[in-house]
Image (tube, rainbow, N blue to C red; front, side, top):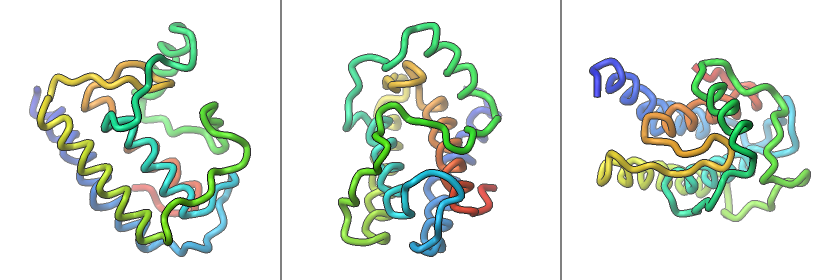
Length: 163
């Protein structure tokens, strides 16, 4: 792995495990989203669900879209262009899932644990590939990029500076 990729990976790991978590802790749980229907805790739990796909606790058997759509989606995902506001997730209903955790702090702790398990999974097997339902088979660096992009999307959704 080149030093540039390694440095970029380290920056994204730090963003997800420190900056993102800190911004979530500082976010008032009553903040209204600028788009969408999830509240703060639902968004945090949604992020945990996304990380559970990345850490292979929630296994996907096949992409939800045909190969040509997956390829096009992957090409976009790998750019630095953000997801658009109100980007639809075909795996989610119009009404958000009810919260599972007793409070925002417990949801953040769950997210931190899922991120730790994600990093451990790939530390134990750096060559591992894990299927994403929209973007296809992803390695560690690709998952890091996607999870960082996804986290920034949701920070922006709640008016938080994502940088």
